Length: 145
Image (cartoon, rainbow, N blue to C red; front, top):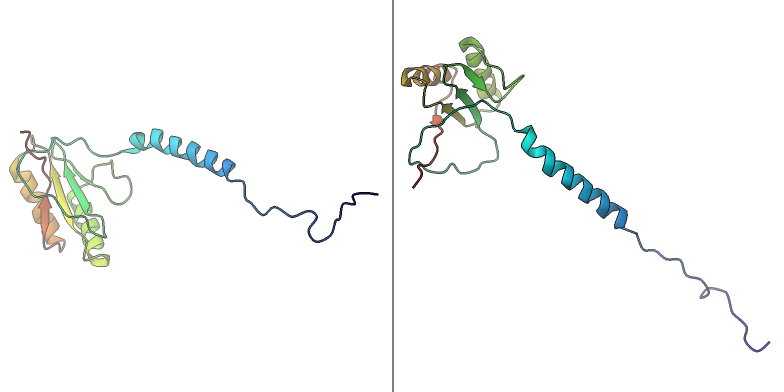
């Protein structure tokens, strides 16, 4: 017996490494799924915004509430049930007042289509101010240079 293999404390060591390859595979599959579905999820109202030089809104902790007015004068709010459905003026006032009551730091913006009469935009802004909103902003598209 020339060579004896000694098994004891130093014989077999347990390997304490984690195999991360399956996690990387799952992450890549999820990334691909999100990249494909993200453009399909975009929702909103078709509004042709006017072009005007304006300042970029600085991002804040709270997302702004966007009230859209389409070319036919219908009103949409991007908060609440069915943001893709138009609402009447009373619902607008109630929804805006509720948001303003529970989140007074929220910014409110109006997206008005270029085809809608200016008077309709002013009516919507007046309704919002009647609901307690102090400042209402207007969304535009920067001019093409």
